[in-house]
Image 1 (cartoon, rainbow over the protein chains, first blue to last red):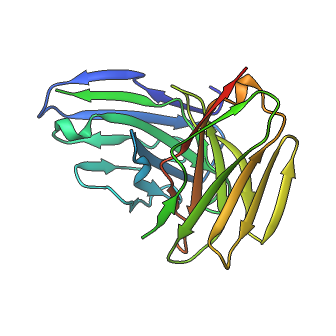
Image 2 (cartoon, each protein chain N blue to C red):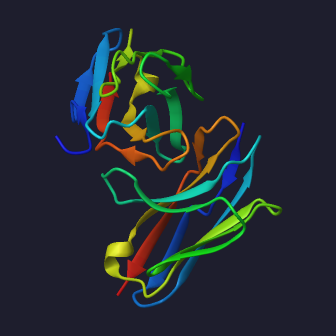
Length: 112
Length: 109
């Protein structure tokens, strides 16, 4: 692994189903982030974690949850997917909150 | 919250110069970033300004005026591969990034 990986690459999901998007980084970065990107709205922060064991809410946290059990992994869970959660999801990490962020390749999620 | 504005689209000719403006209103300020994003790919870091002035990095330069809430990204000697979206992002007092909607630059031969 080099950098940040996300899985799956894309997914079509029925409304009401539970889904976990995975994110793993091997750079030993302390901070990790989840964004969604929608046409015309840019990247919006969903949740973040400044260090393992801590998480915080971003701009659009409703309907999403995260956990940060260790430094490398930062999964994003949709407890009960809705069509408005159709988006491209990017995970990112940075050495600390003060450095530039590095982005994963993204997960394209469609909720029907 | 943050309010970040940048033009939606710009078109320029190969070899030319293009300037992408970004204005912002923020609750606290801890730096401004520019990212490049090619279609279907992840954003990649281009530049960072935290003090007023110009930062030059090869063909790309970024300028910041904190008093005016204004930044620009200057792309010189445009190449076809520079066709992409350019994202302006501001880091607030809590060290979280807020992104503008992005400017799509199309380079024509």
